Length: 367
Image (cartoon, rainbow, N blue to C red; front, side, top):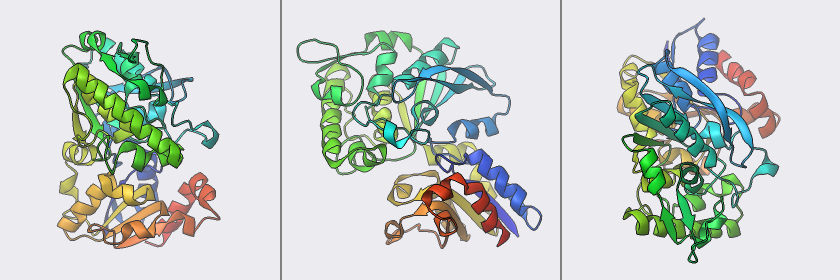
């Protein structure tokens, strides 16, 4: 049997690259296997580009995580020497955050700005920023501040970092930022299509996964409303309802609002860049994965792109996930025909996450 494996990362457990290698080793004794790690802008974004460009150079440096603690991280400088790739999940990621650390009102994207500045100083003229899997929801204000932007209240006082401070946002000065990034084209590669504000806003849909209570979700929405108003006042750009601006705690909004970045839907862009569609025609079975299969999967995540192409070529799909929200599958046009859930094999969710590799191998034995 020809099996095409396109794994997305198991957040906080296995990277997409590690999962791809695991599937290949576990299945190749009995089947012909093509395993390619995929990303939608979230976890695995750097691995995806490294797979496409093995000569790309990893540049390691210190940057602040979502809770403003210095941590070692990295970005890629592709082999052309002029293109940089940044993964927000590696800078202020949710997967590496402990539950007790979560601070949705105070967490910041400041570290992403530090990496952007480092990429510019390294000579990058094009920068791809993978958006997804972060622990902050500050609209990218911290990122912009790290690059020279200043956010002020009505009295002209500089605002602090974190989403809650943006409740008082009245004015944005991005003149220093513009000068620093003049001549550099930035693309935000988003893992979801949601807008900054509205019924499916960054706060309403993704705030709870970052630890936000219902009351805090309302605060986040108000803060993002003030932030969007300040950006429009300063630049004329309306970021409130632009698709993909909710991505990565609304860092997508900050990228397009402050940096003039172009936002791309990651699953479509990356699948085209890797020319993945050509692999579907000869496959007898498609396997894709994700940490949790839920309604967010259908907002534009990489596995959704797999499901769409599989439907186009009438190929069966096995969707392997750590956890599954069965209700989220009801009425979905692209719901997978078969699912395998790690929590069905494990003692509990924690066990499934810690020992994901063991349970994936067990599933492979039955194929």
